[in-house]
Length: 155
Image (cartoon, rainbow, N blue to C red; front, side):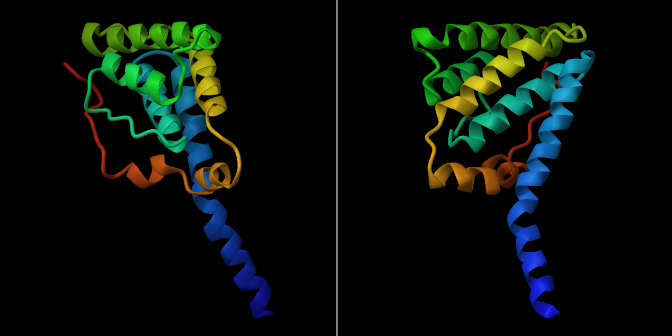
């Protein structure tokens, strides 16, 4: 009777961070899709979290454009095959900057397509194998969540 309980606890401990990360990602994607105040923050936070989960050490202490350049370099999105991801990231940067610096939040759905394109490119940029499993089970973005905080609005 104790063995099944121990096994269940082990499974919960192993999958808990991955489940938590998925829930957080869904919330951010929904907030970005809804538009309005906070949509740019949600989209940007998800890009940074996904980038960290795929092994990048991007810093959110830089400007939006500087951080975007770091994401492009870290995930090798600067090649000609990733032109769509580059364009989508530029659009996200434009919308985020308009929200943060111009108090002009994105319209409903404005971030959805570009965000999916960028996240897909980042997710596809990593190597497979056992490291991919580890990154899924223990997302770096959750481990760093309490250590790196930036204001909800800059400017």
